[in-house]
Structures are given as C-alpha cells and as structure tokens.
Length: 303
Image (cartoon, rainbow, N blue to C red; front, side, top):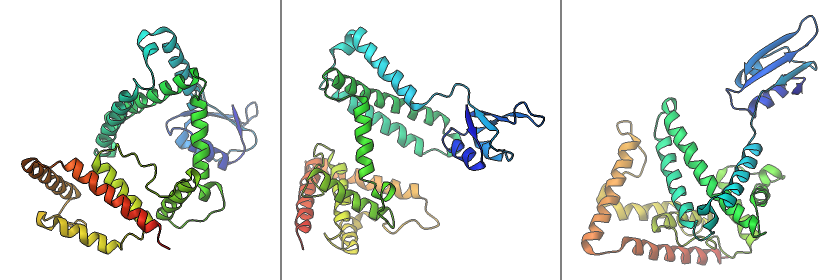
C-alpha cells in the first residue's frame, strides 16, 4: 500500500513499474465520493482526482531484490545437493561464462534486427540468455562467498560505487556537453582510479583481433591527437578503394542493409584471399593492434 497526494507521485510510481502492471487506486475510501479503480501503470497519470486521501495497491509485485535473493538461495542449494555443481570451480566454469556471453550476443543481435512490433519471440530468447549469463555470475559469487572472498552483494555494491565515481555529471556537479565528453572523462577517471599510465592499460589482449583493434581505435579517438579525423578517414579509404566500399553514408536509393552486405562481402573476400596466400589474418591484425597501442602511448606522452 502506498499513499499518494499528487499527480507527480503517480508519475513517479508509473515510471518504476512495467507499463502493464495492474494498480488499484483507492480514493476517498469510506467517504461518499469513494472511488476504487484498477488501472495499468501506464494509465496512472490519467487519474486526475489524486489527493492526500488517495492510495495505491499493487498485488503480488515481485521486486528485483526478491528475485535475486531467491536466485542466490537457489544457487546455494545446488552447491549443497547437486554433485555436478559441487565439483565446479572458478576455472572449470570459465568456458561456460564465455559460451553464455556469446549466446547472449547472438540473441541480442537477432532481437535488434526485427521490427519492434514482432519482437516477442526474440525478446523471450534474450530474456532466457541473459538469465543464463546472470546465473554464471551468481555461481562465481557463491564460490567466492564459500571462500569468504566476495559475494553477490559485495559485487553489486562494488560496481555501483565504481560507476557513481565515474558519473560525476550525474552524481556530482560536473557539467558535460555530450556523450563524447562523457567517454573522454570516463577514460581519465578510469586511468586515475586504477593508477594506469595509458588508456590502453587493462585491455584484454585475449580478445579476438578484430574486436581488439576496434577497441584500440576507440581509445585512439579518445586520445584525439594520434592524427586528425579526416587524415584517419582518408588513410582507411585508400586501403579499401579497390573494394568499392561506400564510406559517406547511404543515398536515397540504397538501404543500410545493402551497405552492410557489401562490407560483409569485402571482409569475406579478404579472408579468402588471405587463406589462399597462407596469411594468418588474426596474427596480422593483432600485430597491427600492437602498433596502434604503441602509437597511442607515444601520443599520450606529448605535451
């Protein structure tokens, strides 16, 4: 039961609930103008007679905290009663964490490719895969708790506290103009927080070479002094001109999927050519990533 007294309170409650949640509005109960009506959370703000004698009742609302408590308790029981779960260690679970992460990515990629009004099946798949991935984190948290090292609560509190520190424009008095400035400040805060000398410190070099190189390109952009944006774009364009790839957006007669498809064709062609030539593209790109890392570090030392 929640007492409300203004439309602003109703709007605040509505924002915190799934739109379809059924809410019972109890208004002036026991008085001559008593009103008891059920509305969806999305309709709450339409109740215009709200005052200090208006309350809300939500039957059986399950919170994220309750769900997580139940999941942690469920994990604890598995460790006590299931022989397979009892045998697992942080090391043995590593491959499962990686597999679940990739399966979640697959589900998300399928989800974003379909129209919003026909997403129910894909959304259910995303929900399932996110649950599988979350369970891996809960499993590691339980192992840490058994070793008296960490648990799910300390993990959740730790990441929240860290992100509060990295969002001074939300939780402090720092002013930012756009997301690019947020990203630049993020790198500075992260570097200072961990005592790092470069934005490239802490990058996982076990990443696939393409992901690794792309991540380093983003870091180079944040450093913003490696070379001008136009110079960088011109160099990249010169390297792929023979493949006839568009680089300046999509015209009215061409869909974005056509452009994506041509990029896919180009990448596939490079992979095939490398295979015929006996070239290890993964190794080549990883070497180029190391060169880019060194370039970034040199620029970071400039006055």
